[in-house]
Image (cartoon, rainbow, N blue to C red; front, side, top):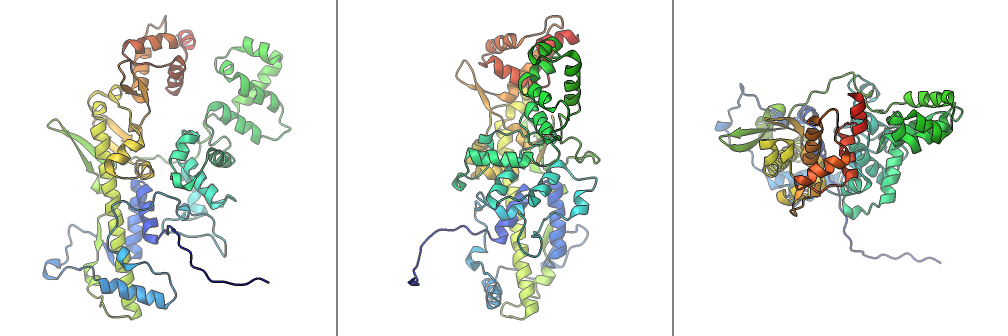
Amino acid sequence: MMRQTVSARLGQNLAFTPQLQQAIRLMQLSTLELKQAVMQTVESNPMLELEENDHIDDEDDQPPIEDDPDLFEDSAESRAANGEAVDDPSDMTDIPDELAVDVSWEDIYEPAASGAGPARTEFADSGFEERNGAGTSLREDLLWQLNLAPLSDRMRLAAFVVVDSIDEDGMLLASIDDLLAALDAELGFDAAEMEAAVQAVQRFDPPGVGARDLSECLLLQLQRLPATTPWRAEASKLVRRYLPLLAGRDDSALLRRTRLSRADLDQVMGLIRSLNPRPGAAVGDAEVDYVEPDVIVRNVDGRWTVELNHELTPKVRVHQQYARYIKPNDTSADNVFLKDNLQDAKWFLKNLEYRNETLLKVAANIVERQRGFFEHGEEGMRPLVLADVAAAVDRHESTISRVTTRKYMATPRGVFELKYFFSSHVGTTAGGEVSSTAIRALIKKLTAEEDPRKPLSDIAIVALLKERGIRVARRTVAKYRDALAIPSSNQRKRVI
């Protein structure tokens, strides 16, 4: 016979309030998305209004609206009376220095909800018609597929990180370790779970999306072809084993190693040429993506200054006239409605301020650390990782990752995404460090200045870099050269 008992248990649990969820959304939005979010919030909340330069209320003649503790208490009491969840009023007056938003926040990613219909959030996807419009980007399309995929909330969180690391060509730029670093360590994700998330995204359309290199991209597309497709098995074998020979157009070596006839090899290569090495390029290419910088960097009298581009975001404030209608001790439905909206308006303004403050701090720290780039170009780039900036501005690494994604900086050298300034390092003979971006720039410069009749081999480039005090392996030079789309020395010589 089972006996029912009552016991008390002490534990810690992190609750994601709507205010914290809103702070996360605002942090990761691009400038254009933020502008739209601000306009939507102003339209839905009567206690907010846009600041008009040509229209100023007679606020000087009226007392300012102060935070009234009774206002929030009354609002909470009325909601509690209706059986609704109530946040602690003491937590609603100020946003902490570092919001507790750097952990699992599955609700932000809008997973498919059980029940009558899909969950709708403040900045949710607006529907099938919008997704299939001309302006749908690859990322939006992948997120749309992610919301429909039959995944657990935990796997959906990992898959979101994967989608966020896919470039416009559909290639996954981050390693498994990089993807794990984008998640809070307390969540306990391991390499096997992240690899499963990568494979889940690789099942999305277009075929080949989420691949980590060209070979995997082509193999994913071949796997999606019907099993009866002629030469599919031979094409998969060639891509898996002999892709460098195929890229080098070494037909004699291919014939010898694959043991195919000339006619059969032509058929296999024809199938491979029908694949798309850039699967994401065709998605959303009907609309030009114009970049508006979030941060502006200028050199004023020899000093680098950093400022936010305030012209991009509408200026919003509390509607003073409506706020004066609120009566602290009135529990009527209309008064409670105004109180709740005033509370939401103040939180929205604080979250906006928090986003802008974090963005400005991060941008200023990047400029301070990468002064060599601004003065000398890519060759002056210094190694920089998320942890460096996170420690300097007192934010979590995942917060830095969000605030530097799809945020752009206008500089005298051009417009760059903030993530551009982060790179790994390579050691020098003097015991220092050199940014991988600077090494790429040097490789590009050396190959551009080489003798066309005697192009530099990777070994020769290694020797030239060593003369500059940079220790780098030949395979590293080859990897950077491939990333710069610079052919090998034999190919460069043959082209000329």
